[in-house]
Image 1 (cartoon, rainbow, N blue to C red):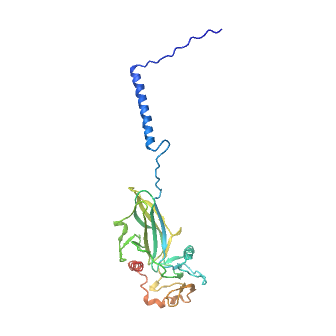
Image 2: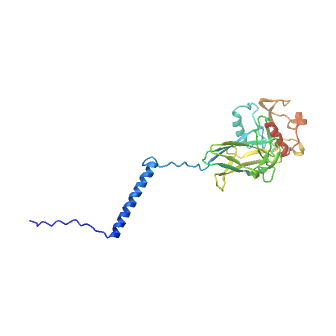
Image 3: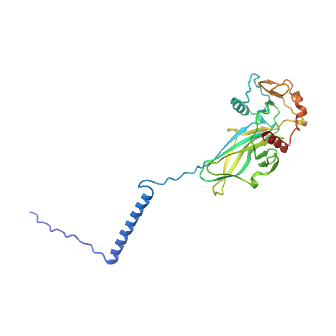
Length: 310
């Protein structure tokens, strides 16, 4: 028989007074931390619940551009054939599809009364947004197009506007326009546009050109909250650059190689069916007396647009 081992007595550790104070202090500190965590959890509505932080969109300002056609007229760079069976319903939804087909084929809007671009703004962020700039970018200039004119004038008008661009300028800047249509100095030199959370606004921007055929985009700059570094949005015409051509008028006479229109012979109104003009050189004769100077200067054109939209 194996002899029984004696039981070991439980050893009681006796710490020196300084070590005992250290252990007590650690215990109290740990307990305090646990109590604090419990209180915080209760204040947050229970264990496992975290406060939800509202995420700020990377681009808090939603910006879109639309083209409001004061005139539906376009000019193609060369001889272009258009079916005379085409029905033009100027008030219908098919017009936008036709316009995009024409632009994709190389046409530009005919600057008989400028081109108005609507810049729509929505602040979908949490902080205020300040629009501090709008500029023309990717600007290309060529001589006015003189190929095929599709003439469908006077079918719309821009809304009330505050800003206009003269694309004849070497570096076009957004000009302020007063209620009477008088062109003032640079718009953003003296002011900016501010949108609070959820605010919407639309900036109607007529652009005009008298000496060139142009293609361009717009770049809008804005600040979010107290930021000092602006964000930018580039705008175009549904993926294509905005396109506008001045009236082709060498020696003051409007000249095109081919013209289609749905105007009645007296120019009183539009018919629904297109027709090719037999003699483009004589097309303007019925209204020659009422035509303005060609080319028309920027200030006069903007004032005319303001009177129409008034």
